[in-house]
Image 1 (cartoon, one colour):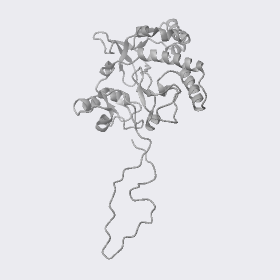
Image 2 (cartoon, one colour):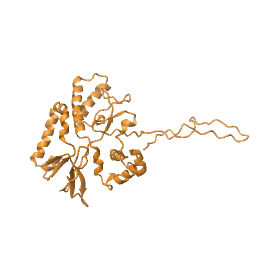
Image 3 (tube, one colour):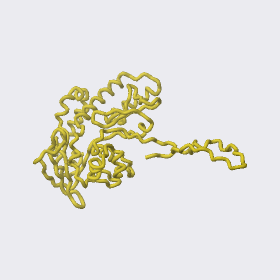
Image 4 (cartoon, one colour):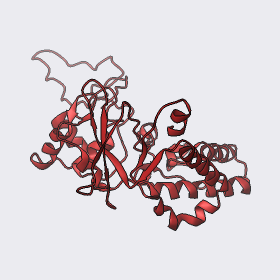
Length: 310
């Protein structure tokens, strides 16, 4: 994006990256197996050099300043846990800020059906898949980002593998090798750019975490420190964080991190009948005979329509 903006005439003072590219060193074998990806990265790096854009690794934007619009940002150098180092903060004037904090797979449909999950190398939750892209639920296959963020080429490859499996055909060895190569590269990126725990310390008390319900970080911290909340669900009940239009799909990971909860799958059910307590039949009145009901459904069977639960 920085290169495209600069090519269009914008002045880009810096690209600020919280991770350190030295983290790729242990992943050298995975990188060397994907020369096309290395070439793509070199192209991006060349665009930054060509336009004179500084690349600041192990730094982060910790504050944005302005009244009606962004006027400046504060950046700081980070330690290995992503905590700002004292004395390294500096202010950079700007009139726009582009922010990216990684990608999180959307698993609600699969987890609502009961599919098992695991933790991906970047700390996010992904579906547990076998070699044929099958989930833990019979008859359900998955391909692409639900198995861990990996890009379009990996998603297409996994889709082909799933198609062969669904059709009952053997998976070509070339597809299996390509998936392994691309998944290894995705894993290398995930490890190198996995967020450190110190990022929650950047947030001021008034910073909005849940934008739908306008719940600030201070209220979530209060729920965790003083009211005993230890998970996103309890925080939601105490603060309304996650009760808005997106139902926590945007703020859920941040709320969980502030509450001290490890990443976990969203397991809201797709639908379920409302519980209805069993009731004893009324006692017959004196002098009358109790007749059986003509309703083929029993009193405890409940309504036949599904309802969505949140």
